[in-house]
Structure formats: C-alpha cells, structure tokens
Image (tube, rainbow, N blue to C red; front, side, top):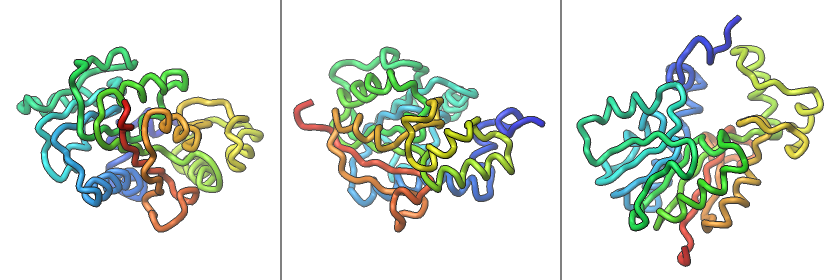
Length: 238
C-alpha cells in the first residue's frame, strides 16, 4: 500500500483538513501571535524553506520586500512563483545550500523565518544557514521545528504507523531512546533523531534566544507539545 507521501502532495497531506491540518496551521498562528505581540516591523522578510509562500498570507501587513529560499521539494517554489507573479517586491529563489542564498552584503531584513525547515537540513550545513541568516537579519528570527522526542514523539510515530503508513523507520532500540530523549543514540535522518534543544545551542552562536514555547497548546510545557516555536534576535555585534 502506498504511503500518504506517495499518494498526495505536500499541501494535500498537511493542510487539507482534519486534526493534522490544525496541527500544521498552528505554527502559522504561533508566528502571527508572536509578531503581533512583539509589534515587529514586517517591511522586509527573509524566509528559509518558504515552500509556496504560505507565510505571506499570515503577515499582519504585506511586506515591502520579501524573499523566500527553498529547495523546491515537491514543486512548492513553482506554486509560489505562479501565485505571486504580479508582485515584484516578492521573490522566490531556489537554494539547496547557504552559498546559493545570493544576497548583497548590504541587504538586511527586519524579520527572518524558518518554519519546519531546519530539521530537514543535513546537520553539517545548519551552521552555514544560520550564519547566513544572521548576517542579513537586524531584528527577529522566528523558528519552528517539530518535537521528535519524549512521549509526544512516540504518540506521533504510533499514529502515523497505524493510520498513514508514512512513519519513519526506527529500530526498537531507537524507539526507546527517542522516547527517553537520548537522541544521540538515534540515527539521524531529517525528522528522525532531530533534537530541538541541540538546535537551540546552534542558534545561540549567532542570535540571542528571547523565548521558547510549544504549540498548538502553548499553555503546556514545550516537551508536551507537537511543535516548538523559538523567538531569537540578532546580536548587536553581528
């Protein structure tokens, strides 16, 4: 039997309704809440992993300048370019490495965003992306990533295994270690073995961490939430 990924496109799988859709839209609601609460300027925005540019629809105001970088997995970038073809201030660029994020040295943005993206990047490349974003951000950096450890991980994995057949393959030992939070003993493959706490340490090299919270149930401790939202801010000396 085909997995959901084989049968449906990205938007169909994640945003076509039901509980899964609500969970994935939660990161956009989290972003809008944080931007509004902090009264952030949204004149210029850089987004890594923009897919079809869905984030633009969740901004409190349309930006004067927006650039989205994406590897164009499943044709997301093509959808974005078609949708915003008549908006010259909005651009989308295919990039599969930090070196392909072509920006002038003087170009800086009020806000940078990476939503459900950094967990997909090979670990050796993450530092390069964070450095690049830091060099071009003078303001906030909003990051969302999945929670792939603890009891929440196990609940998500079992649900996918039973209902959608697109669960990542884990050995019994890896399942136990991921549930116990010992991700250094889990073979890394995108979501598999991803540790948001390790990412936070990487972020701290280039940004000041302002807040860490969970979503969609922000009243719960982050370890009990499906997704993690990180608010960072550019360091003054960068």
